[in-house]
Image 1: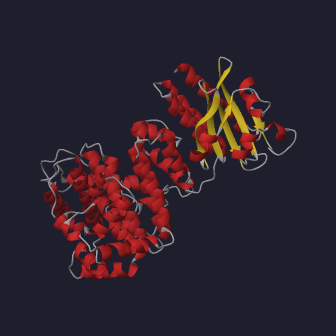
Image 2: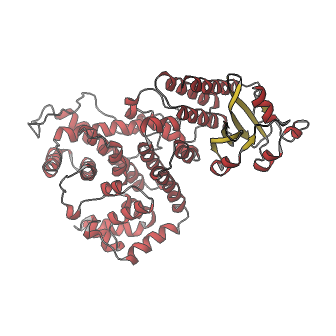
Image 3: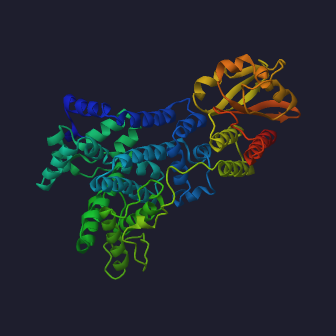
Length: 525
């Protein structure tokens, strides 16, 4: 931790305790900690991370929307399940996106004043610029750069939200000539940077991300000795570049860009053209993500300034002498002016609270499986996609897969999604020795069964006691997985309402298609 950012235990502990005593911060912390713990665990699985994300409807929808934007176009195809996103993008990338979305959603809920709204938008923009700079530098850790950029001013943001009066005092001291670090240290007893880093530690963020998000000690650009150092340098450059775009007059734009080039060129290979391109790309990404993240605001003064700065740069840089004549990279050029506010072009009809279109989710999941089966695939990964598709498409209480265990002669629940799934999986099992109940009828005869009311006779008498002790579902369905006329498994889904499943609906047909895809995946493997 930078030396000038050290705080006394009393200063630090009192600020952190204030956060924990607030009404909403503990819930935010719990979600972020759970996401990070899943990824860092040696026993983590696609199912565990997916289930953690699926518990939050808005997070699930927004994450899927983000990974299907142009930013992730290199992965090809539409990603319709969290499971597939984890397989394609990896645990760390999905963790970073999920953590970012959780934080942004939290900030949006608190962003009433225009000043705070601008802070939220600028925070996300720094992340986008950091990502673009990293891509332009041809480094691979661009997703880490994005989350570091977004968390770069975490301490400042939390101070605005929870210590608003003190944050205004900090601003006043900055206007009087103090640095932000000096001003926040003087008012809060702890610098913004240290405050943000300590909160990030409490959220169990990886050490490399905590290092990458921090400001420089004494405002001096560090030397780059490894990829973590480059992460930190890129994050700080993105923050300074964003501040330049938002606060510098157009007349001084080239001077300010040149200053950044000179300030950072000894640490990373950067030129004016690269910086200008990163700003332009950041605005494009902001427009693409704005509605997904509920950032649409026609009154955002901050973003208008950035858009005007970048637009003027794009239109005049061809006519003026380049700042860096030896630049090898060329920024994108255009004769078309940008909108006063690029967020105004966002499609305002889509929100994080979109209603679930079950059939569309099921159809998209089927296509996801088809795409997976075309090339090399892992059966377990395909099964996770199918289970998640069933869970989201049905909007049910719980879904799981029974698997036959030849040694114990049991049908044992192996994986699933939904309420309390982790605790219930070990108990969800039944013997393959015949018994006159619906479970044995399904797996012994290969029959799809829909129970519309578990309490209705004569069905109630066919539901086994072991099941009644575990579940209080009002309706459920069974879809056996048959290989060579023998059940190797069985999909199960339950609802907390009577008639939760319509036997005549198209959804049931789509569920059978998913089950059949599981059979195909197992046969081909």
